[in-house]
Image (cartoon, rainbow, N blue to C red; front, side, top):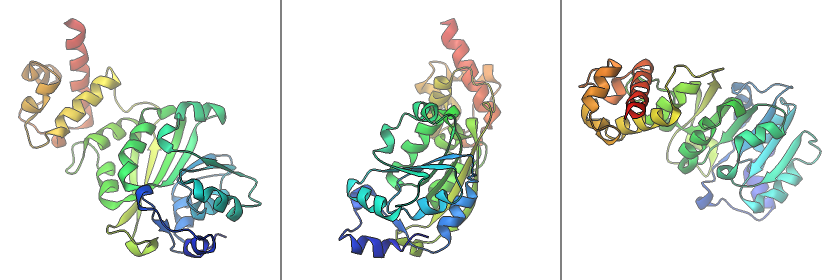
Length: 278
């Protein structure tokens, strides 16, 4: 069982570092709930983003066959080595998650990974996009995120609150909110509430988009100017957006957040067709 992170930090003469976005989970029982929410099993290789002082790592090691615990803050590496001594299933690694090659990581570990992490709020989007760029490298991801961010990511296309990120995530995964976590569960307490989100990777893309780059271009254009009608928002990706919308069978006056996944896919395929014809 892991110790209270506050006790661990004091014992090592350390403190939280704001530039790393550190908010250590201190609420008893929450790490076990997170580990259970992500469905880690004995046959899984788990990759933990931001192991901190090993609070969640202990809970993951009790469930998974192997845990790769990544930590960027080098001053915490000896702390992890001390706190996780005797945990033979855990491999501690220093590094930045934004430098991880997910496809290579999965190949080196014999197959897709299960990803966990108490993610720094300022890096959440980049981390999720990195995983979406290598969908075959993982099967599930379970993240502790800012609640507002988690709710947007879980919102499917066509519903209020959806975003460019959730539209991209929906292509490859099904995202669900598992439970909420209040500020007092952390040290130091953040100014926002948090939530645990689980992304279950689909075996194949939900729809045919023609070209993933075209799909990303379409959703980014639509949500960069989400209050504008599609015929105006898509000017950045197509010289004749009305013709593009008509070819896809999409209402030119619709706004991005009102479009379903099927409609977004149709727009992407239509854009690919136009670029091929030009």
